[in-house]
Length: 306
Ligand code: ZN
Image (tube, rainbow, N blue to C red; front, side, top):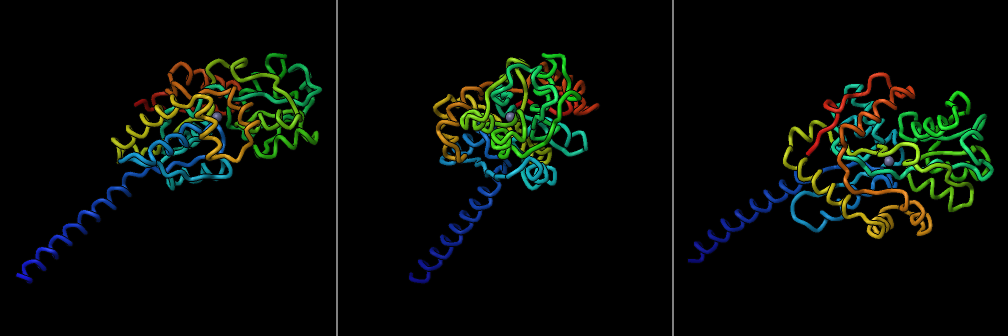
């Protein structure tokens, strides 16, 4: 009898350990690794990670980076399954043969042209120094759009690339006369009293695109169901980000003051994050017109809708 019980227990133990092995393998497989920068433009994916934390099934493993170049390196070398990234940088990677697709927007609107307090109009920017985070960015496009309102081009000013975190203090010290960058660094300049908003993005470019959520082709092809579920939950998370929820999420993941977040979050929205063909084609035209790229990827090559 003892022997039988022991045999049953052994077999039960074996079964239990097999079940738990299976569970471990399954949960490891059910993670999607997403690269992000700690900015308000990536709040939709941060909210999704938070939403899925306590639910069964797919989890989002967030991987934080300090700069776009580091993040791109991780995305392009396949160390992550996807990223919330400046869409022009992702387009450039795609153009260079990296297997990625844009599956949603990061946000809608949400950028501003910040200038020093003595600048009143776009024409006053002539001969001045203006900072953008990267040549491949909507911030560069918005600068070109702002200058065009006064008949100017980037040939009429000095354009410099600066790290986003350095821009508010560079404006305060007079090293630069204006900047356009992912948020909340524009709001930080306003909060410091270093500058003011000359244009918001929607005044220059209606339905502007800026950040995109991208996934690697490898992830999309090998785990189609997870990819679909991830994108659906992402859009739901975006739709749930009203001002209050956005602020709560930002306070959890970004080290920013209430004042900076209150200023910044008035400019942005996270609902309806589909990438439409019309808005993408407008972006493509601007990318070509302002010399960011001559051959950006087409909508059908680059955008995947779920
Ligand atoms: Zn953005």
